[in-house]
Length: 241
Image: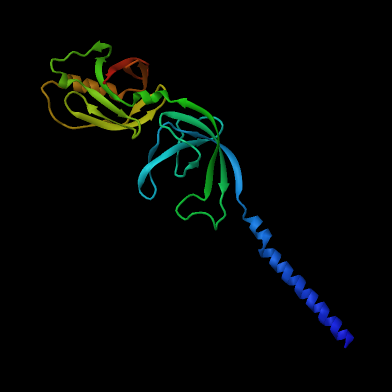
């Protein structure tokens, strides 16, 4: 009888140990395995947002990751950065904490990574945003454009938010995309236009030909000079009020 009681005690101890082991496998240690995993990264934020599609059409930040800014290699950023007060017209360098949320905490309709601003490392005015305006043609190939009817004067509206241009060559409406814009380079995409015939198409044709060859620009006060690949000014504009 005594031996039987000892056997029962041994079995009970073994079962208890097994149950404790089972509890530890799904208890606190399991919670630790899914604890948020955080890292710190450096982000650059563009001075302009860009069109993107989330639940519907919207505007997203454009970012680059890394210590150094790399040309125009911007990527759409669909999330938000907690504590970051974005203002259009500035390029930012940020130190950001990224936290990978556990699967049971990640929202179904948002990123599974939580972004939090730690520090604004740099904030600078983006000079190229001065292009974002309406410009009236003053000179072609360095020669002043004189017209009897000012309604025939070519003009351009440059929209950097949507990376497009619209305007008139003096006869027809012109429009298209801006392919690339930096602090001193500018490239127009294929120029589309209406097809109305005017009495004298000379200025309209010359305007479109010069516009198609633009690769650089410079800004001097309220004046914009568009240049070809050789750096020669082919079109000069005055900003409108």
